[in-house]
Length: 286
Image 1 (spheres, rainbow, N blue to C red):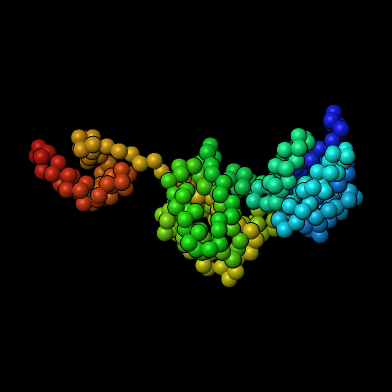
Image 2: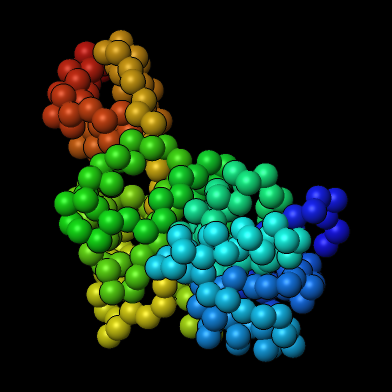
């Protein structure tokens, strides 16, 4: 933990999201050697520290006192103390307190170093079965209905995989709002990641909702991964006729089935596609 400057270093330390074994050797070393640990909930963090025999002094730093704690922490850092920031689970500042502290410390030109580790968003995304090359993390959406719907409207046309956090009490409400605004997209609901009752429900949003409705209760924080908006393919009438003729000879679908397939693929009126298919069938040589 050497620091060439006279000031100490603020370490942003990722901790387990559930299973206490999901912590890096480096994280344990930093927590042991730090002069102070700033924790979201000191009572909760004591369980982790006790498990690894870490006796570093704890102070609280949560959303309700963060603003008041910032001057004190900066003063400690300027005297040369090294401080580790942890949250209840996962990586600090990611839908958790700490952003204001990091910003304030960085403005003072004091070193801020991440100690990488667990993140429910990344862990769940890796097994979601949805595209991982591009994603948009939205965290917790507003609780009020109108504001939540507005937030969903703002990401409706994003083509990247969408990531949301939600409490078990509100997850069904969120999915219902998504069905209205985003449509019935592919999704994955991750619950109790790394814990005893770990669960992943994959399927369409409506299928996930059906499974949740069958449960007597829903427990554990939820991470929801939703397919982004599929890019719409555009074609002119000439290209459409060519595609219809090709598929009439290769797909083996009936007129209605083919019309449904093409209208969905290119976001066209099924009635229009159906009429074109009938006209092309009439023109085909017998």
